[in-house]
Image (cartoon, rainbow, N blue to C red; front, side):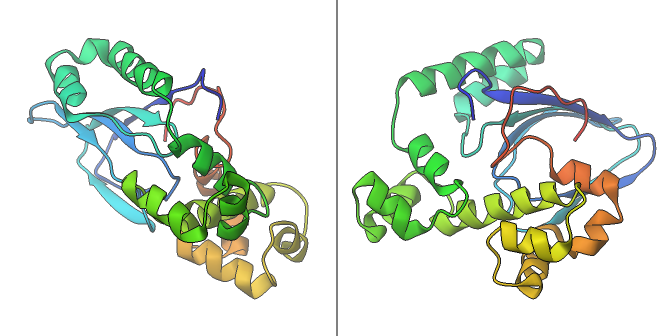
Length: 224
């Protein structure tokens, strides 16, 4: 998660009414939503714990900014963006740069939790705190429990491997799942599909694997 990439811009427009799937990715998004016949709206999404469906009317336009994993934006900044949407990127960049400069334990904890093979116990030991203290620190940051980050990052890495030529058994083993059944349960939990079903839907798999928790990059994306 390089500091030079505080957010990922994306854009989506519906030609017809749409039920758009949304999958957990460890990121909040700032959305500028323009629906036909409605006032422009600014939305800060919550962290998704499970797959969901967003109902979008025909002609809806969304300019989105996916924040770095775990990051959020103050309500005052959202209000400023609502007053001047044309400066959204500038305002978000300034806000996130200021937050970054302030430091704090949040990013260090998340980076440790998303490492392959990490456990809550090993991360706590590496950071020099008890497991209970680590859990309390994450809770005080207003974030889901440590296992959310660890298990979601593992599932997202495994989803990325589904795009290659490995067998499901090999992917399950490489990703740290006890067996293929365990792998399948976790894919259904986070993405609502079995691994073989995801392999059969490359467009859906590509959406799940966009830059977010566990594979944050500096790449730009155009749709979500």
